[in-house]
Image (cartoon, rainbow over all chains, first blue to last red; front, top):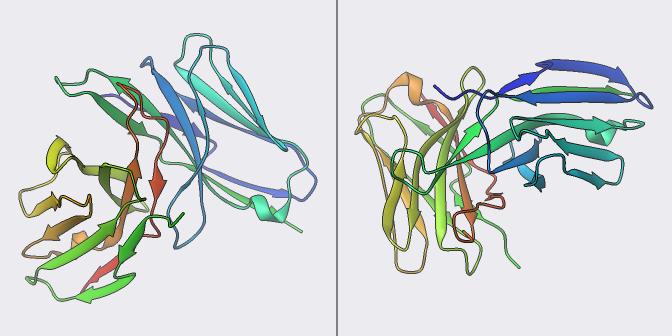
Length: 115
Length: 115
């Protein structure tokens, strides 16, 4: 069974603090996507990383794909209340069971940024 | 550019009934995927359609079915509803590029409650 573990599961911090969430697997992914989801809404794509060791920045968010393409991290600098939400990672596996591709989803990190 | 539209947003059904959910993808997106999201299980893949053909299927019972029309709009149907089917059902569209999925655009979901 292919799993994608996210940690921590829950995180509550004060505005202005930094944080890192992790996404780990024993599987190698062709790409890895990060999403943020607010209550009652669908996930919104933040970034897709493709190359091992790749680092992408989106304002205060920094995403890194592991060299072996098995893990990823999301670092938020100076968190704001608007960063509150569920952060999900999803890794794409190619050539699963004869089909083109499959996305493996983590259970998410629920982040609360308090004023 | 209109996003992914799911209807209805909320639905309350009784055990044993059936339900049909609708999804209109972003114009030009031919791939539509359906997911079930619950707090304990996270995002569970139901099926993916591409050009009116089911391309991938998750591990759900036959009570869950779907289809895609020539205009890429998709519907999913759940028959003989059970209490455990209560969940947020999400539709996502994407533009597959070769064997790579660069990310989904999700709709806001349909919140189904079975009583």
